[in-house]
Amino acid sequence: MERMSSYQRVQATLNHEEPDRVPVHFFCSLKSASLLGINNYQEYLQKPEYISQGELSFYNKFHLDSLLVFTDLCIVPEAYGCKVRYYTNNSPSVAGHIINELEDYEKLEVLDPLKGGRMPTIIKATELLTKKMKKKVPVTVGYMHPLGTLLDLRGRERGLADIILHPALLHKALETVTQTIAEFLKECAYAGADGLFIAPGGYGGVLTQEQALKFGIKYDAKLIEILKKETGLHVTAHFCGRKPFIDLCLREYPPIEILSWWDKGSNLSLSEAKKKYGDKICLSSGLDQNKTLLFGSPVDVEMEAKEAIKIAAKGGGYILAPGCEISHRTPDENLFAILEAARKYGNYPISDK
Amino acid sequence: MLEKIREDILNYRREETKKNVCKALNEGLLPSEILEKGLLGGLKAVIEEYNKDEIGLPEVVLATWTFREGMEVLEPFLKNLEKAKPKGIIVIGTVEGDIHDLGKNIIKTFLTVSGYEVYDLGVDVSAKEFVSKAKESNANIVAMSALMTTTMFNMEKVVEALKESGIRDKVKIIIGGGPTNLDFSKRIGADGYAREGKEAIEVVDKLMSEMRR
Ligand code: B12
Ligand SMILES: [Zn+2]
Image 1 (cartoon, each protein chain N blue to C red):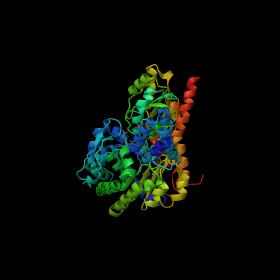
Image 2: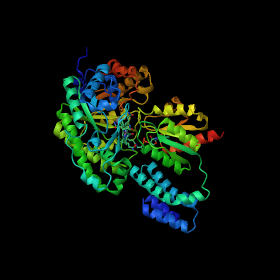
Image 3: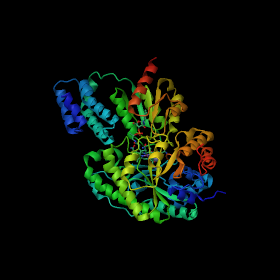
Image 4: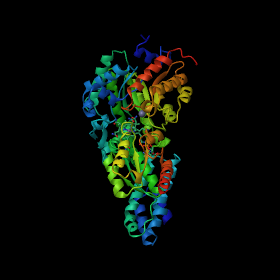
């Protein structure tokens, strides 16, 4: 028997105290669906019972310390009326856009999360799952940031061009979309979520720092501010890709609790992050979802986990995790190896050896 | 005049570009020269700035649109005259199940600018489509993009399909996109991998020279 429940373990970590051992987190909604035996992802996404049961199956199999409800990025665009293309064994994508004429930008309204598309499905799933977990395992709900969502309403290329051609229209629409996402995540919080997870994509390679600041980061910050004020929940900022603007974002955002990024593939290493942010923000990273977890052996995973713990776990504030959603093809043995490594090397106090 | 067209691309002046390409043609400038020094010259300069992180994708998108409009005017004239022989023929696409195309489009622009003839199959492209386009166009290179760990495995299907169709020896395969890497390219039997545009040109050039040997 371990000394702490997952909930207590994560709570201590958030408080930058040393828990009994390093907590473990990873996620993959497609895998949750197939563990439940639902092999059509479209079907899975329509029923709150499926989503909550799927996450529960994932927990029952891997016994991780925190669960994330983050099924796809089409939820808000679909609620706005965008056509969505579903696949049986892959995440859906936005296939038709609703901002076709420039006037359409000004027609956007803040949506009611209890009515729009699959927003109620996710809210209900959150309620069901948190009830099941009874504060033994924290449940976090995630969504994409305002700019990414707006670009999907307009179509990526056209939306990016509008950054230069029609900035004022974009700003007005971003205010509205920020409100809608805030309303949605607030309802998830009221439904019982323990934390919120915001994914601003990566920015680097897409926008310049100046563009990112004006059109992206500004509204991420606004969203986080509203959520913190109205829900009081802890916030994870998740950065994808190789060139995230992490320093810039963290400078502009209100204080966040967890930083999740791809330490193995991006421009911020785990040791650098520990030095820069380790005393204020919990770090969630250390395992390479695209290499070690997917193609390595359980021993490779154990070694990578051991090294990450050595670098980042001391003093608390560390969650052993991959840098992004894992592939549904990740071998189960490699996922078991994560928790085993945390139990083997991650017991506090962590020794220097 | 060529300098003007170059500037038009750099400043995303779509109407002016079309007008100035017409003017240049009327002045008797060679279509191939208008393409090389004017339109492509401008696009190359934009890509250079993007490489240095001085501009973002919004600028690249606008420059590409401007380039395309200029090309619409120029294309019919290029067809009549001897078109500069391309360095090679490339078929590019994002693999089945994947709709990420910003990166693929950048790679396409890079390769076009460096002198390749590129056929773009778009997104969510099946193995069958890759094979039939490669056959039809006599491609030297098949280039695939995947941004997700769910879809990267579909690249292997394309490699297999190329083998089955008997043209695997005739083409070199290059892959790229977020979750892929050199290891993965070898694992699935591709010939090359590149992390970004500049490297893609280097790798493709190398693959072309290997093929000639
Ligand atoms: C923008 C984006 C989107 C846009 C795509 C718009 C478009 N038209 O492309 C939208 C919002 C629509 C989108 C949708 C989705 N996305 Co997305 N997206 C991104 C994001 C933030 C940036 C990608 C990008 O365009 N970068 C800019 C370009 C210029 O860079 P690049 O693509 O990496 O390309 C460069 C290199 O990779 C390379 N390269 C690329 N292709 C090729 C090809 C060759 C031959 C070569 C040599 C090189 C090469 O050169 C390029 C230039 O430097 C990434 C995260 C990230 N930061 O990478 C997630 C990401 C790729 N998306 C992800 C996901 C999950 C999705 C969705 C499934 C979300 C959902 N649930 O709805 C859907 C996909 C649906 C589908 N079936 O395809 C995940 C993938 C995770 C995984 N499982 O592996 C990522 C990593 C983010 C995440 N973790 O959530 N996404
Ligand atoms: Zn990510």
